[in-house]
Length: 293
Length: 293
Image 1 (cartoon, chains in turn yellow, green):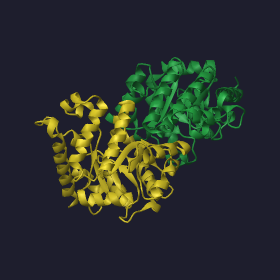
Image 2 (cartoon, rainbow over the protein chains, first blue to last red):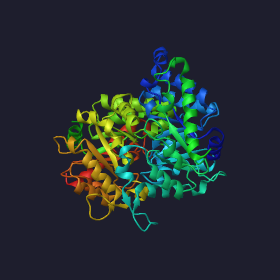
Image 3 (cartoon, one colour):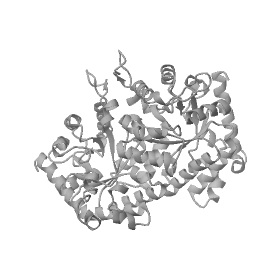
Image 4 (cartoon, one colour):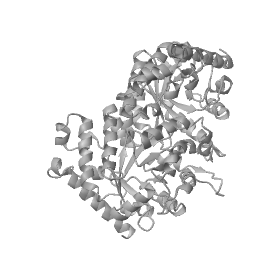
């Protein structure tokens, strides 16, 4: 199962998930100016970052919004970035946060698991309930694919809904909404647990929400966690350590912190892949230190 | 403001929102076979449906998943469909249900309000809170654009989260989560009310959820409602009537019911636009009858 591959990747290469979220201001000026189009510049940038980091990161997360902003050409670049990662033997998470129902969710499964935008994992938004993931289950059952459902996000306004006290059928007292979501996500994934002990349906919990991270990790042992928020959003090794169980069970995402590591350094055009690699190694050390590896 | 244009469209042409969600099995066989690609067949189908219905529907909703399933070529068709609707003077709702944060939400605003995929309105998922809509607000403040936030969706599993009893700061007793979401959405839109009395930030409430529709309509008078679920999902005029106030304040979406009206009828290849038009007129009559127009 794909979740076993992700687990092994964390064992072998550490828990860093590199976010390939390029933007014009993050690219070295020379690369940007020499490319014939923004989408071409993004693709070249991504390829070189991937080449330099394959052996030191667990996986890549590609945020589709950064490509969608460039329109149809940008989405061709999103497709080609996913293909490149997977062709090189890397694991690709399509961060698409889709959430829809019935025949519409089926189209998303086609697009992101079987079509142009095929990834190994994608992120989904749970607000519409289990109808959202039903069309993805056959691929999960075959062991080919995995999902990460949003549970507690890393942004400041996440608390507006996600921390709302609500009643859960199994809890005597109100719990924050995100915990009820975590409970549902864990339930949906019960039948899909790999040899590694984690389910092909994982959850997203932000590294900036330490308490949520600790509670979800403690209560739902089979949930593999995708933890955004490291670096630019403020989380550090200390904050994300609670996501792990025996040094595995989570990957921690950083984007700008890694792919923008060349900013203000010498020879960024030539050396940006090396800077990204060094930043990924430093991030891995920081996390390993806190989880005792 | 764009919400005033939508209000006037409902006054002049009725409350039908035609869903342009093409799929291979919905297209007349001849059209499908003659086209050089699926995306080209979709575009030709959409154009002819738009031409035949512009004067009898309030607006069009284009569900991006149906295009995303065809990959990059499909998204070019999505772009061209939106452009065609808007060039013909129609109002286009991009049903993208995006929901992300900070710099990522900013990219979505760029993609769907200013870039290749420009629509007049788009749908958003509120699970991540107000950070999701912040980057869209400048366009709303200029009066150019509008949003519909998911409140209570039309699918069976919507109740798993959306009906969960939760505490709202302003309610003495627990309320279903969707009502708290409606309250937040109404609050976010308070500053953006047009001459028509409705805000540029509206809500999505499914026509299959009659009680939710009635409660949201009653408690949040400035919320313009986008009501899916008519036809194939089972809602009829009687079910959606509660969404309206004095014959306006909502549009009701049907997709398959309208664009698939040619199935099993004579000469579908030639006459499908006419069948869609007739179905839209029948749907309008059905709704008007229940709202007393």
